[in-house]
Image (tube, rainbow, N blue to C red; front, side, top):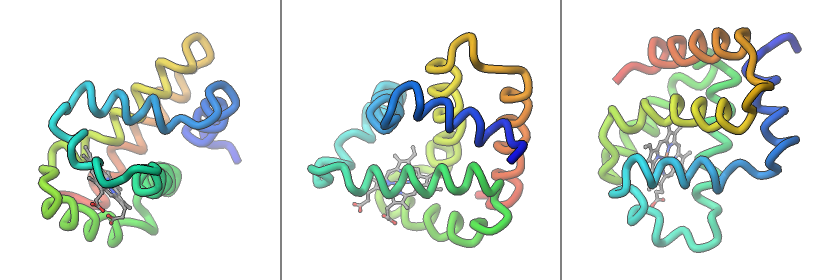
Length: 126
Ligand code: HEM
């Protein structure tokens, strides 16, 4: 598949294995109030499930998952996650991938990610 976003995510997993700890560390650093929301998630299963949907949405660009993302947006309002934080999660993942890839991050990846983030916010607007 000629997809710079997919390629960057593959490289990420080759380099760091499971990216979950570094992505959630960045979330809790940026939005410290969100850490308490996960206290019940002892084994990290919910965090894992959430991240796999986020990756799926990023690979899909919102074409297939737009409806589900809208539902998750509403669920997340119920958890106390405002729309803005919800939407920024994709960009936070991009920053994490870019930092982890370092010199292996390409211009095509930057462009591909930016296009994908724009597609996602258009497909599942607040
Ligand atoms: C700052 C952004 C976000 C925060 C703080 C956040 C927080 C949470 C929390 C606290 C839970 C656990 C809820 C519970 O069961 O008690 C959760 C679950 C989940 N999140 Fe997120 N979330 C964010 C963004 C997203 C995004 C962008 C998506 C997908 C597009 C997503 C998809 C999910 C899914 C699929 C689950 C598990 C099942 C569910 O509760 O519906 N989350 N999230």
